Image (tube, rainbow, N blue to C red):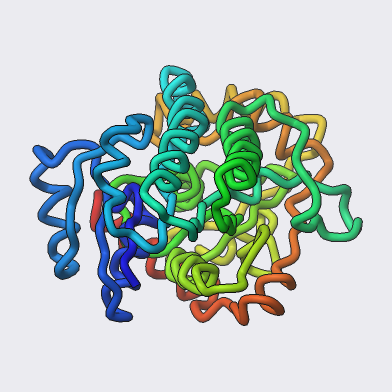
Length: 335
């Protein structure tokens, strides 16, 4: 299978390129700048991969990269929650990038497209409510990244219908595991736990996770003929922040459990504490007022991967504990 992966230097893109090569596929990938030698050398270390300098927003560059490609894996994205200076880039990369990439794919005769979306395109639910499914869409778009993911996936489905593309979308939970060179917002949550941000109290909320290697496997399974629609990919249990810190503490004895679970009415104070912790202790920024309002609001992450298990024969091969352990190794390596 001749494939192109957009964003091969990113956390997921890098792991997906590695998986495709290990399964004997021909692989090309896009990087924003081939002058970035560290990125180029890192991707080339995986094996015989063709590299293309391309910004997904640039139709001409994507058209050139997509020559002779059978399956496009559109993975590239700007993942940012707390950096307000990047909000425009987050939206443009998602929306303009999706349009130019899919139009270039259609012009090149590519008919199979697997696109990375996110569980943030799905609504959170009240506790004990039925799990959200692929048929539902998040309408709380106050966070630019959430808006980018929802609107870009909806655009992709409209373009697929217009251009005759066979599209499948993968909706991963927060991606952890090895293979990143700089922390993503999801990795920052793990790092904040390690650095003790939740020691005085854990927010009354939860977060969903999945290992990057299992997400890469889901993309490959979704490329097979007959796979269609949206697929949620994640662990069955989305741990509370208290559970998350305790799980990390079982792997690193220096990480102490939270002294309490903060009441929901204290949630508006969390961005202030997050900024204080960042300034004084150097913890990564993980909270904005919009993020707290969306995720520590009495509702919870509650998704089901049953469709992926049934229709793709996907299941997580890497346990949550092992994925956390591998994530901690990467975090320490980058320190």
